[in-house]
Every structure is written in structure tokens, then in C-alpha cells.
Length: 354
Image (cartoon, rainbow, N blue to C red):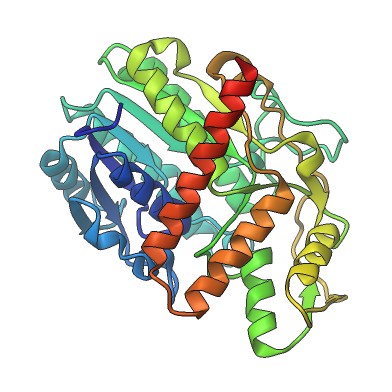
């Protein structure tokens, strides 16, 4: 499906974008990347040498339309995966205007550039599970639930969903471009060094020999390994190339049992790393949702997608990756081996289902 196909990944220097670019290149795609410099040091992009596996490792800002147009003109992608964003809730409180500019207007500018490029046939815009108007209820959110967002990050991603719906109806459908949005859960995996994320914070605390301070140990999130939603994005893009029936919003969340409290996840991490420990942070912090679950029934029924690695496997694979990096291993090879293991598990599950 992906052999020799021209693909643009925005945000390829980030955590999810780096994994996606590596996976696409392994499938034989001509991957063109467009992003700012890696957001952290170290980074997945540098650790795995992503620049060496993509056809074009281009730096640029979504807020510069001319640079974006040049990128699409050079890449001439058939498929666009839009992951470039300001992705952190707590940073959005410090930088609200920058967050809205990157996540809302950045998405609009990307769609404008895509509709000016006659090669583009399918676009997958990645948003977040936090686009829903969170009511703190116990059941999972479906794609038909109202959008909203108390914090600037969540609100900006909900706005991005509205931008996509407008462009889909006003321009792209009649222009022959099929656009879908994808909403994933709290993603974990090797190569994430972002601030204010649970697993990177845990690993930094372990390295420093300090206990991890947890803001809200009872908060429930839909945890999943990074390869889970990425497999959904790839499948969704394939379906978009086949039919416009899939040009809409999709949830790609974990199994119901893998929506777990933060404290539960940290306890399991401590069980994997001897000497690790944590305590509750009693300081005041900006508001974050307490309960969040995703309903992925639609993706299971209409796309045939389902999660393959449970949370225990996801945590073990994350620690495995990090230890390999600490040992100086070839991290591209390690990452590709995990991708192969994931694909093997997916193929076995399909055979069982048949």
C-alpha cells in the first residue's frame, strides 16, 4: 500500500511524528517531513536518525504560508499526516496565544496549502482525546459528543476540529481531497522527552535519583502505546484513498480496561524500575480533567481497527526502549524491531478473528 507513495508528515521531528515517519519509511514510502527543530534534547528524531530515513527533512513554521507552499510543491504528497502542534496542556496556560496560533491557524494554513497542491488526495489531521467537552462522567466519549475545552490546549484542538469540518464541507470534498481527523488517547512509548508528561517525568526522576511528584494520582486517562494510534492513522489514510465515506472524525483509544488512574500507572512503572518511587504533589496547579475515556467502537466496526498491546505491554516496551537508549544501542533498529513485533501481534490477532 505504501511502497513508493509520496507522503508528507508535519511534525516529523516530534515524538509521534518521528515514530510515524520511521514506520512509513520502513514500508517503502517516500516520506517528506516539515517541522520546527526537535522540541527536546535528546529527541526521538535524533536518537533514531529520522533525518536519514526521510526523503526530505525540511524545517519550517506552519505560520509561514510561503514556506509551507514551497514544501508541498517540492514534496507533491498524495497523503498528508498533520501532527505539527503545540501539544502540551500546561504549556498552553503559559502560552495561550501561541497555542491557538499553532493549533488552529496552523491547521488552517496546512489545509489551505493542501488544497493548492493538485497531488494531495488524502489528509489525516491528528487532534486529541481532549477535544471533547469534558463532563467528568464515567463513560467513554464518542465522536458525536460535543466539542469543548477548559484549557487553551484542549480548546485549540477542538477549534482545529471545527476548522477541518469547515474545510471538508466548503473546499476539500469538491476539490477531490478526503480529510479525516483522528483523536487518540494518552500516548506513551520510547523516545518521548517532553516536559509535563507522566512517563518522561518518571524517567527523569529515576535518573536524578529522586521521587516523582504526582499532581493528580486519581485522574483517569486512556493510556496506549504510540504504535496503537499510529496504526489507526495509517489504516485511516488507506481507507481515505479508497473512499470518501471515511472522511470524518475517528477515535483511536485503548481497550476499556486500559483507562487507568495516574497512580496505578506509576505503581506499575515503579515495579519495572527498581528503586523508583513517587509521592503526591500538594501544590496548586492549573485545572486538568479528572476523568477521560475514549470509545473506539466506530473504528472497530467500520475500519476493522483495534488495539493490540495492552497497557502492561506498552509500559514494558517503553522501559525496554529507554534502557536500550541508555546502553547506546542502535535506536532505529530497536524502534523498527518494536514496530515489527507490533505488526506480528496485529497479524496474529487478525488470523484469530478470521
